[in-house]
Length: 454
Image 1 (tube, one colour):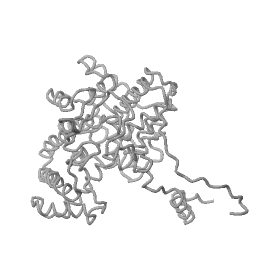
Image 2: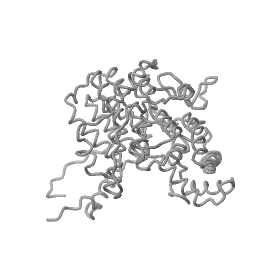
Image 3: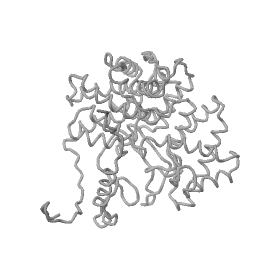
């Protein structure tokens, strides 16, 4: 018998789906009637406080004369301002991701000996089980590397004889191993897709223990293993800026929820990966890149503010690009006046644009940044302020680094596994209750009807 087509949506499935919609649609007004915070957000968009954390702090407003006022966005890792952290390692011409991971996990900056030892530990752990690449990574490759990454993480459970041990030393060991191996799991999954689906040459490079995480990423990704110093520094910066962003973002909250059930590290991380995969969370930088490809095609004079502004209005009016009415990369759920990560990334994207001869494209991004604020404020009547988020410039930087789009979101995961690990450990140390929010039942009682009378 021929294999069934498991991917086909039949007419019967469409009919049954209509029953789901008909009998599962809740009157939106009931959320207000019962004072339910949709999406765990207040009416003003602020997240409902569900926990405490010392890992990172996000500020978007200040209290002035007893009133909350928007302020320039601030981000702190373990109390250290992200600007100071970046200026520290950049000023000393060092890579910063390993130092950032140490800070997030252990709550303090390492001295040189501690950093050297931790970097060596990551290098030691940056190796996959024997034949894992052949037996797992190369099987059932697909274009969605996030799915491959989640599958690999779950499979690593089978290689760990202490997989279910949730003592802090064991969980720390598991987390550090995952932090070390996420670059390999992601890039090797991409190479498998590239070879078996796109019919390209296959090459698997081993990491170099003397290199940083960012350098190894570029080394194992590229056929010739070559990269420039600036390329590695930009990628390292991206990892630092994506490593953590408070306990309230969707994937990190997933870490807390799943960890609170007492499950193993691999299951917790896989759940967070599946959350990050969602286009409303981790895939926004791809949308920004596609939007700019569309703008570059339709705006003839990149230096004409009027032409750019007119096209941005068309995008907002759902007349251009994907007809969603969104200018991707503009605005953030928390920040209003500015996203500090975007402000930092912008400086380094400019440097990279000079190395790559992409100054005109950088200026186009600059113009869209400036003009989109005006257009959105006018058309959407947003008065609190709107600014580019980190996705606005990261997609541009990744394109200049010639990174495949399939790796954009996995690179986010390569960075954010540091934050997830810190939050998992924090949850295990401080919480002793499973996270169990309440849902208000609004269904009316209905009597049971015997099947012969239906």
